[in-house]
Amino acid sequence: MEDLNQYLEEFQKEEYEILAYITVNWGYSGQYGDYHRILLCFPAMVDLRTGECIVEDGRIDYLVKDEDYEKNEYFHFDENGIYHFLVSKCVPKDLDPMFLASMNNTYLVKKVIEDNASNPELEAIRTEYMKEGTLEAGNTEFTLNRRYEWFEGKADILGGTCLVFLCLDRNSKKKAKKASARFESLMQDMKELDKKLKDFCAERMIDSANEWKEDENDPDITPDVFKEKMGAPNEMVVNNNGKVEISYGDGDMFGGHSIQICLNADNSIKDCGLVG
Image (cartoon, rainbow, N blue to C red; front, side):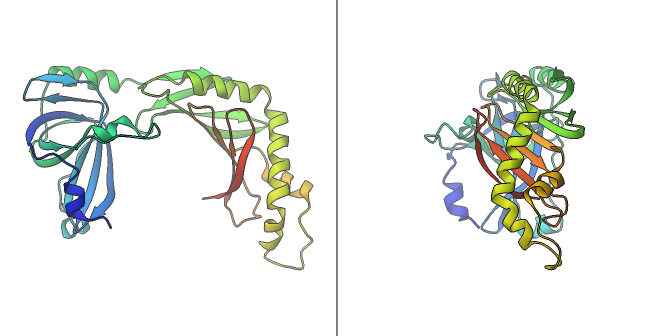
C-alpha cells in the first residue's frame, strides 16, 4: 500500500478542465491509503483552457474510497467514451528510456463533469481508432487488438496451433513491422529453433520434472521423453525490440504449467521456466 499524501504530491496544484477519449479502462491498479486507484488510458485529449486537441498517449487516475470500491458503488468508465474532467496534471519526472512517455502525461481526476461529452476532433480520432486492422505475416492473418497494443493470430507451427502476438512498433497505433519481420524470420528456421529450445529446457529442467513425479516409483523422465512431452509451441509473443517469449505445454510434467523460453533478438536463449 502506497502513502496517499506522497501520491498526491506527484500532481500539480493547478486544476483545469479537459476532454479525454478513453480507450482502455484497466480498473484497479493500486491502493493509496484508504483509496483504490482506477487507471484509464487515452490517445488524445482536449485542453479546454486553449481548445487545443493534443494527440498524445496519456493516463487518467481516478481515486475511489475502499468501501465504495468493495461495494462496486463508484463511477464506471466505458471504453471508447469521451469524458469531461476537472483534473490536475502530474509533476514531470526524468524518465528512464524503458518507461512510457505517458507517465509524464497523467491526470488526477478531481471531478467527472460529463460522461457523454462531444468533440468533433476526438470523435474523428475515435472513429479511426475503432477501425479493425489486419496484417499477414508468416502465412498467418493477424487482427489488431488495440487494448493490448498488439496483433494477434493463430499460426500453424510444427503441426500444432500456436497463439501469436505481434507487439506494435514503439509509438505506433497500428503498425507492427519489426515484430512481423521477426516472426517471419523465426518461421523460416522454426524446426531447427524448436530443437534448440527443447534441448535447452531438457538440460535445465529435467531434474525438476523428475522431482514433480506423482509416484516416485515411476520411471525417470529421460531427455527424449521430456522433449516429446513439450510438443509444439502453443504461444508466442514477439516484441518490437526483437525479443521473443515462446511457450510450450508441460505434458503433465509440472502439474499443467506452461514452459516458457525467452529469446534475445539474436536468437540466443536468455532463460526458461514455468508460467501459469
